[in-house]
Image (cartoon, rainbow, N blue to C red; front, top):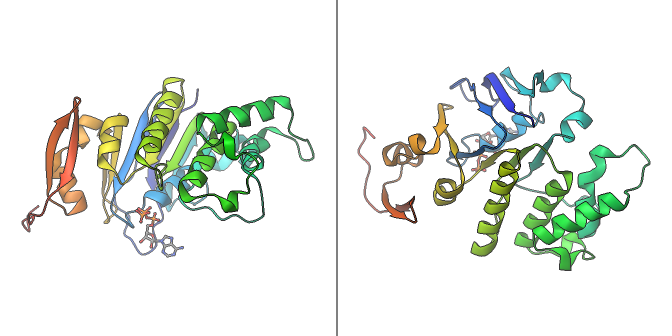
Length: 262
Ligand SMILES: Nc1ncnc2c1ncn2[C@@H]1O[C@H](COP(=O)(O)OP(=O)(O)OP(=O)(O)O)[C@@H](O)[C@H]1O
């Protein structure tokens, strides 16, 4: 089991002053939700944690090593990233796409073996896209593609999951199924962080929350200390009503002005 930690991390959002230095640890078993407005830097943060964006300052550690000292292959054997947007560079079927998740474990010209296929097939089943295995990904709907992207990372079987709006394009049932899958991965010992725009999914499924403000200011901690209506109203510049359903808060945007002091 591996933890992902940041040390005095400042992400590099162009044109923004430094903001809060991030010192946080995503422990195995934890599910973190990152909340913030459009452009707050959520994707930049996830890409920085994955080693795809250089930090402006500070560092990210995977286990006890700085990410910058690890080879990409070592990182890819431990850390999986579900991208918000995907480009289909070349024609590939759903099964071929899921098998990309095994590439970190194969040598240069090594073909995928029976175990790799079994993992990919199991992941496609788990994401409810096995019936699409021979379809070209370019022919899929938005929600089907999203589930294939999740299945590819599930095939990769990382200890650290970073997921950028994993419920994008998904209908209600599949949103719930994907959040349950993330929780299950955490229960099995993975560390999970995901960016979400749906406060209610965050309230129900995440145990830790990072609030990212457009200024670069940030705060984080256990869910119940972060999902405080006044803090969320300040984050989104949006008045909210809160009700409780099944023991979890449900936040509903309402039309009422915020004062200048909020
Ligand atoms: N290559 C770039 N050049 C200039 N600005 C950039 C670049 N990449 C990102 N940005 C800016 O950095 C800011 C943060 O972008 P980011 O994608 O991390 O936001 P986000 O919180 O994920 O937003 P959203 O909720 O809309 O997905 C945005 O204002 C974006 O326009």
